[in-house]
Amino acid sequence: MLCAISGEVPQDPVVSSKSGNVFSRALIESHISTHGTDPIT
Image (cartoon, rainbow, N blue to C red; front, side):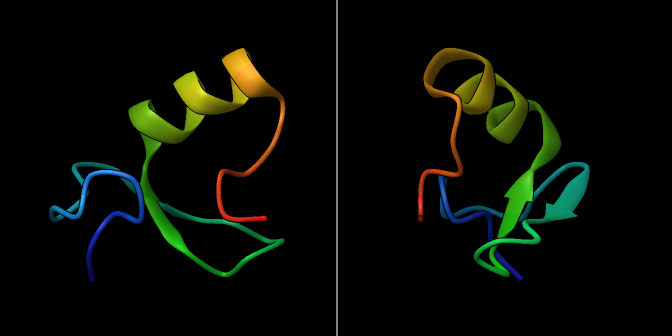
């Protein structure tokens, strides 16, 4: 299981309900606060 943003094992893994991808919580929260969307969708 790798983070779809970093390609590394996520520290605090979360799964996107839209794309089903796994992300590190800190990275996906940062991306969503900046861009407003899942980076994969």
